[in-house]
Length: 259
Image (cartoon, rainbow, N blue to C red):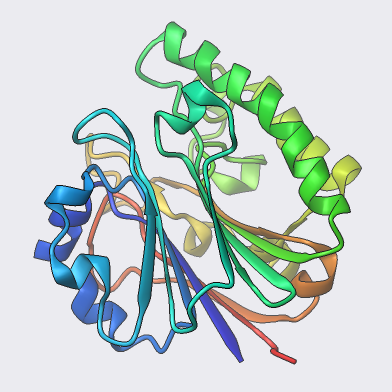
């Protein structure tokens, strides 16, 4: 079995103080992708850099207390690719790839557009430039699991209040159409949805801090494991861990059969 976890930590130091690494030690995961570190190398304590039994690699944002992604793995990667080679995207620490034999695992943190129209345009520009990279990855012949916070709920089933959010970032028609293109035209697979096509409330991975969103499970499914068809077909079970809260997101855990 190959267990992969994706978790937006909304600050690695904050998540650590809420018990994230203690929880992680009990999961027997092979690879853990984390997003929104909100830390620089100098801020990272030993348990954050290399938890017991894991190698850690990171892509930090240049701006302090902002963005950043990481990957923990039991096996040391054969190769690590930090960033996309696009200066403005890489300055925000949004992409990290680790290769293990024929498998690549990627930690991705896609921009949010909810803070301003300007940031929404940054998000659209990211999507436009990221699509060719997704095509290249798909055509590479490697098996790939791309984990992360995509900041897009794909379909009405993927968020509680879909009707009132149709003009809001994260559920805009253009964003949803882009994700449909990634699946239907480019050929990536939404692994959770492959396993559980009709799952609603238990699929949510993020809850607003406003109102009683968490208590009432008024959530969104915006964290995904998206994979090439070969490895996607080997997924056996998936779950969203909600018994403890480390962040405003919940970890997405997927088990794959392993050759």
